[in-house]
Length: 393
Image (cartoon, rainbow, N blue to C red; front, side, top):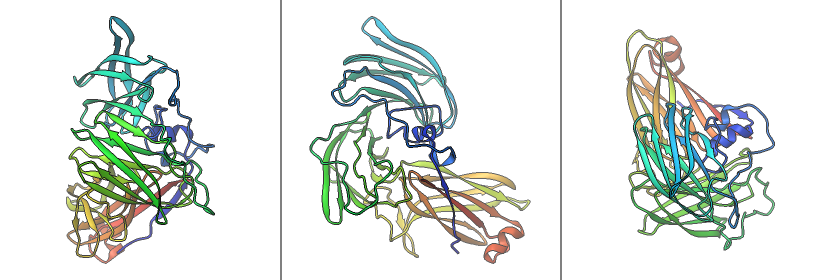
């Protein structure tokens, strides 16, 4: 049984958007990553403080927490015998929280960055500052480690951007693409974008393991675009980049995952939480399955997965025993896309639409046990699922 999702339109605030766009802009703040959770109105996203190509401004250093726990961090930046930064700071719980350490920090050259986390994790990194690599993020990983991430914004003078579709409505904030490499090997990726059979963008990017590439704005019109990403070893991934008019801040995410798989979608991977209420007095076994429908993007080799008898591809599955009362179950979102979520118990199952894109996301609440659950789909204790969709407008 598929139930109608409840659609909520929420205006994104400048602070909320900056937090959520930490991978798309360079204005880290102490704010949550999800812009859909705020209700303050704004005229648009916070402006980036990243110097453009050719700028003579100094470089900046920031920290981003991808862990769900707060941390304390000490940072020291040296230039030979000269200390440029010696700082200790607290970083709020993530994922997605970030804050500046210093702006206008250094000029072009090589610097040593030494950092230590309260967990004991350390980082000793040689930071090469050039005209393109003027920002460095110290990333607290989800397992409480430390990684460097240089931010690169190429000029892309060989492309006529942003692309405009005649007669189409303009996007409030024309989207960029972010390119991340989380594997152990550098990669060279060619990203191509088409509209109506016309290829208007194709560019090769050097996706080093310690860098994140942010492109200039790619398109300015709402519409549907075909995206093809190809690695230099022949791996490919595709995505139907659908940008409806209700989206004010879309994004394109290109990822080489930890396992080397190539993924492309409309948002970054995440672990989403589904709230579960067990109204019975005994434990219940619950399985949550995330499926990409057959009529959605096939995704190339991006998220792997297996086919289902009813159509679609299973991209993640979680089985958990839930206690009486309230609890949460984590769902792995391999890349931003339009999915379906099936919740199954021994007595039955229920399926809801589950978009998990940047600025178009879903929260789900599940009830098992008791009459309120069984009454919704004909079983004594089958699951009842309510989903709530949020968009930035």
